[in-house]
Amino acid sequence: MRRIIFVATVSDSVFYACSRRRDCMNWTDERVEKLKRLWAEGLSASQIAAQLGGVSRNAVIGKVHRLNLPGRVKAGGTATPTRAPKRPAAPQQRPASFAARPASQAPLRQPRPADIAAMQDEIEASASEPRILETVGNSVVPMARRLTLTELTERTCKWPVGDPLKDDFHFCGAEACDGSPYCKYHARMAYQPVNERRRAANAVARG
DNA sequence: CCCTGATTCGC
DNA sequence: GCGAATCAGG
Image (cartoon, rainbow, N blue to C red):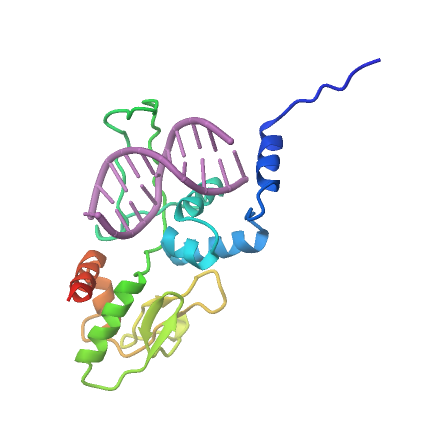
């Protein structure tokens, strides 16, 4: 007669630890899809965590890595910070083995709520002509004509809006500035570094 | 200090 | 698999 030997695996311990917690949040397919969509749209991990609810930004980042989603890459030297491929010295409880971070492509990160508020204030304060603002995803954008690629001309704003993989993807299509592929609003977004917008927003917040 | 993403490792 | 802790960097 053979005895069945119980082997406690990592999965068993995880299941036990998870099932005994009442507030245990699991990554359902729906939440994973939402995570993928928001990450692709360029939202930060903390923003995604806030939208999903019940998870921290670390949880979001961890999930992103486990899903092997593309990381963020700096664009124009103003977007996502990058990390040195090697850590100079190991901290107290860390081994000195750090693999180089794989470089990968990623969409531009969208501005955070504070940035959006600051930009909206700027627009409302400086706009000499009436302009209708609308919210698309996490961005506040001017009234767009929602043109498709083939509808763009020399005089239309070519700022992309939405997820290129989704049906609702379109271009702003507003009247472009002279010599710019973008309208007055998106030209600012395209050429003003995110950090400067953030600094301006913080200065306003502090009074 | 605020924020960001990246990584490790105990669970 | 999960995510807190901890890192580097803007």
